[in-house]
Length: 281
Image (cartoon, rainbow, N blue to C red; front, side, top):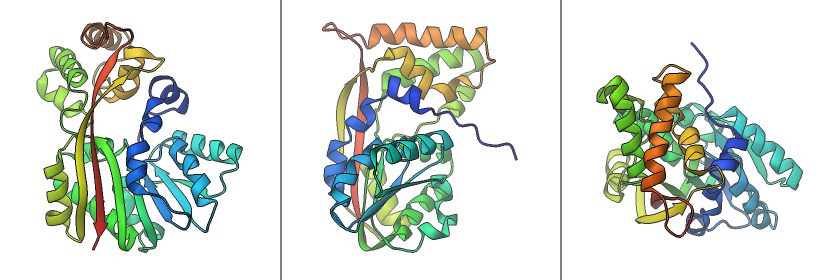
């Protein structure tokens, strides 16, 4: 079996998406990390948020174990934690959709599970298979102690709708809408979907809080093009490398630099965030 392509790099992320960990404040407040918490972070990326939690965890016996499917991001996270002296942070390459097979993470010993800006990718990778989506939430539940909580933030219904439309339209003109939709890696649900999935389909969960927030976000140093190249990479893989792909990227960027332009300066992206706090029964 061919190795799964790693689309991520810490350098590209810092250039075009450094705002992601900076805007995690609210979901971290929902998580409410305490000094003795044992936290599992699913989709930790380059570990910025984990290292921020070190200050609290260092006061007690707690720790945070970050997992991500990207070896490049885990390597960057481990290096950053070592440089910061964040001894309470550990990292491991784990595909979230294979969490149930990671027996050392399924012992029901974590007090909290956390995820920020990752589940729309994780659930998007199996959006045509609701059973696999359910299996993920079951594995997250089985990682927790009874009464433990799962706090997550992800793209919610309507997230980056203007960007998604531009990507699908440009791609559909070249390969047809069906193939364009198949290339779309994202899954953006609403509160009702999350509640039904966790409480009814999977069971053993009680959703205590859920909200969707429209949060226009200013593009990073990489601008619209940096964002499109980083986060839209999987869309463009259905096109041949070279001229065809670059022409498609240019078409998308040209449209979005008009649609997303802020008269006050810069570009704003139409982020919609779904936040959920659920407790294991």
